[in-house]
Amino acid sequence: MEDHIFEKFSDSAQKLLKKAKNKFGQAEVITGVNNNVLVIFENGKLNKVIQTNDNAILGLRITDKGCLGLTGSLKIPNVSQLMKEGEVSAHYGTKSFFNFPNNPTGVLAKPKIFDDDVPQTSIKKIVLGANKALDCLRRDLSDFTPEALVFHWSWGKVRIINSSGLDLSRSGTQTEMSLEVAKRKENDFFTIESDRNSRKWESKVLDLVDEVKIKASLGKKIVNISEASPLIVFSPEAVGSLISYLSYSLNGRVVNDRSSRLLGKLGKRLFDKRINLTDSPLEDFRPSSLSFDDEGTPTSNQPLINNGVVSSFLYDLQEGGKAGVKSTGSGSRGSVYSNVSPVSSNLILSGGKKPWNSILKGIKKGILVHSFIGEGQGNMANGDFSLSIQLGYFINNGEIVGRVKNLGIAGNVFKLLKEGIVDLSKETEWHGSLSAPYLVLDGVSLTAMS
Image 1 (cartoon, one colour):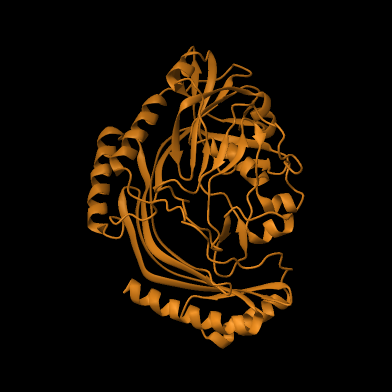
Image 2: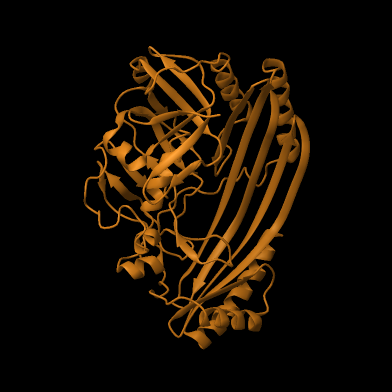
């Protein structure tokens, strides 16, 4: 069925492109079909199963009188109507700074992004595995409530064609699995989360249960902090809260808007020499891996920060055209109704030289942070952040001795990554589209939260 729907939309895309090319000169059509399955358990019980098959999209972008227009459809389109919508959109659209690309020359890098097992995943098997995991939680963590256990998997195809002769297709899969448990006692709300996100099923749900059990065991005791300025350790899953500030400033659109703190800083060392950050879309089975972006531009690994030196920014065709540089293959179209924007793919923050256990033993006083409440307060442009700790542990003389409560941290990302790095662990972990080490920082402000 999926192939049939995809073929029908592809045929419509070709007809639409032919007419759009004749009328506007430059045109691009993206079409795709996607299948999704969502299984949700709440409070230890199966709450809902949502299965949507053959969700199809078709998006049109045109250049008319030097301006960009776009429109789209979620069904087999009325070609004349879409042409008119595209023309109206271009009338009010922004100036175009690029030409649609040809088919790429040479051989495209092809990271593995499709796992045959994902479309074959049985809802029954997922539910059976989930119930076993919930039984394990009830047995081993009886004082915790399994707030949410969520499974989401999808698979689909995308095709991009344009008036310059480009014609590229890809098939991909995605999987997500998350677990949240909570213990509610008077004056204490203890929440623990664990998740997996990949293009294949990398782990079993019992692996999430094991992680939660370890975190719960470490947090049985609540420790009151009197130390004014302990070291703050960001676990690999928490590092993303800092890296988001860097990815914002490395975005070509932000640079072009002159809102980036890194504007005019290419080739300059602004960070500790141990900071190496790479945009890496060619990793096998990682969530944001692609051989070409949503404009048909080939992807490649981009060193963004190399030994502390700002090395490159991320561009799509439009922002690259504005800057007078080539696209880095970072164009992403959130929906058929939205403009393309540059985004990062998989980000890799390189690790250091010491094992985490060795670093831990050397910390006299510190707080190991795993997660935060919400997004916190901050200024993406200048790097200031303020975050409330959801799950953190106190480190005393090289040992994790208990859980901390009602604490927040604040600082400036750019300053801390230049002057405040104490160490980075040799080990790195993937969490979503970020691979990162344990990051030990000095100079982070610690505040009491009501």
